[in-house]
Length: 131
Ligand SMILES: [Zn+2]
Ligand SMILES: [Zn+2]
Image 1 (cartoon, rainbow, N blue to C red):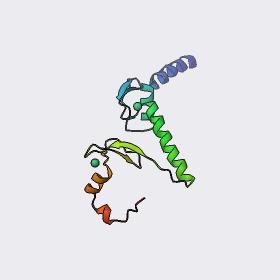
Image 2 (cartoon, rainbow, N blue to C red; image 1 turned 90 degrees about the horizontal axis):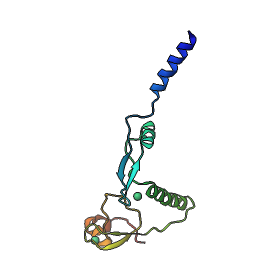
Image 3 (cartoon, protein in one colour; image 1 turned 120 degrees about the horizontal axis):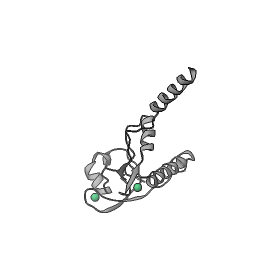
Image 4 (cartoon, protein in one colour; image 1 turned 135 degrees about the vertical axis):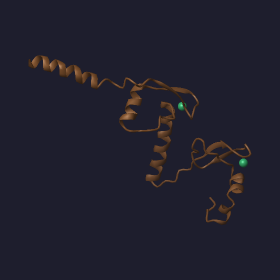
């Protein structure tokens, strides 16, 4: 009797933990390098497990590169050394190449200095120290 019970229970629990059968590998376009990468069902299950709502935006390499950038910045901040960052971007208004002292986030326009000041004239009157 106990044998049959055990077998039943075993079968039942095995069905209950069937691994994320509703998930399928998804192809996502990386916002950094614009290449498609695979978001596997296993990773989706992991995200769901962690209650992360937003799917990844970057492929593994870009994510790693981003983490390294952030880590470098964090290290510089901890050591008190001011890190000078220069990222080359093109101005969203006039299209000129310009360098900015930060890593622009995707989807947010970046302007060259003159366009930026044009759009934010109050900064000229503010206490933004000139470097
Ligand atoms: Zn990428
Ligand atoms: Zn500009």
